[in-house]
Length: 69
Image 1: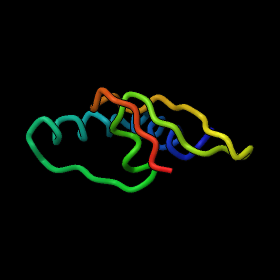
Image 2 (image 1 turned 135 degrees about the vertical axis):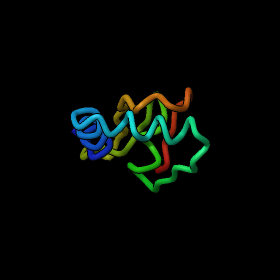
Image 3 (image 1 turned 90 degrees about the vertical axis):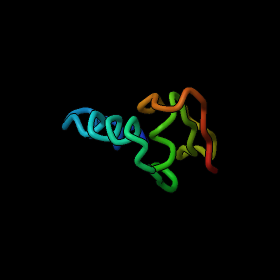
Image 4 (image 1 turned 180 degrees about the horizontal axis):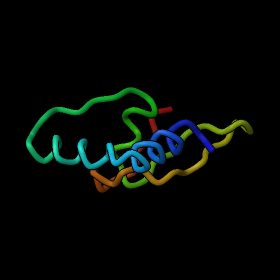
């Protein structure tokens, strides 16, 4: 499991994703770098330990796919 999926899992576990979604809907600017940027999208891809890429489900706030690396 990558850091992005861990981050999203924890946010959902503690319902923090609901706070983020509410802020987004109010027009508050949300930003991040790496995993912090990837989490906003439906799907994201990140490097894995085999020098390949692995897909993760994000929060789905943006209906696109993102790969920062």
